[in-house]
Image 1 (cartoon, rainbow, N blue to C red):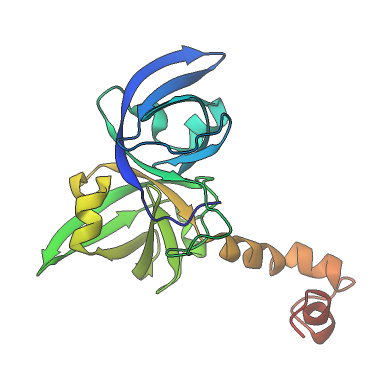
Image 2: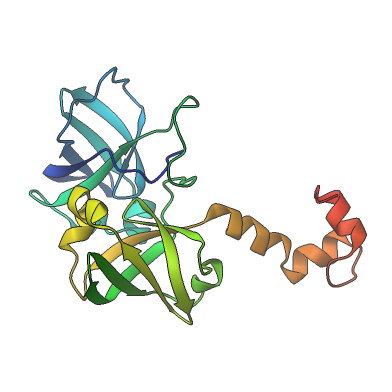
Length: 219
C-alpha cells in the first residue's frame, strides 16, 4: 500500500521487451535506503516489484495486464515518473490509501492557472466516473489529490505550487494521458450496493434493509 505522497521524481533509463511485457530500468533520483529485493515501489501510481536495486537505480517487470491499464508502455528512456516507496505501519498517512493498482487512463481536458494554483480538468470513461465524488480522494499518476468537482466523464482537481514543483504533474499539457486510481473504498461500496449482491445477501429482495446493514457491520 501507498499514500500518494511522492518521494521524488525519477527517470526511466532503460526499456526492453521480455516475455510479452517489458522491463523498465529506473533512476529514482534519491537513495533507496535499506533496499530489499522484491519490495514494492509505485511508479507514477503503478505498484511494481523492484529488483537489481543499486543506489538510486532499480529495475521492474511490467506485465501485459499493467500495460493495458496504465501509460507505462507509452514511456521510454528520459521520461520522468513519480516514485513512492511502500507505506510502513509507522508512517504518517499524509494522503489516502493507494493500492498502486491503476483503474484506467484519463486525458487532460484543460489546464488553468488561478492565482498560485492550477486547476486541471480530466476526461475519462463514464464507467469509471461513478467512483469519483466531490471532495473525495483520487490518485493521478500516483499523486493523492482531492476532487474539486465531477460530472459525467469529467472531474477537476486544484493543485498547489509545491505539488506541481515536486511531481510530474507540473509538466502536464492538454491531451496528455495520466494513470488514475479511484478510491478503493468507493469500489467496495459500489459492489456491495449492486443489485446482484443485494439480492443474494437479502434472499432475493431488492434494496438495503436492516439485515443487510447488520451483516456488513454497519450496526
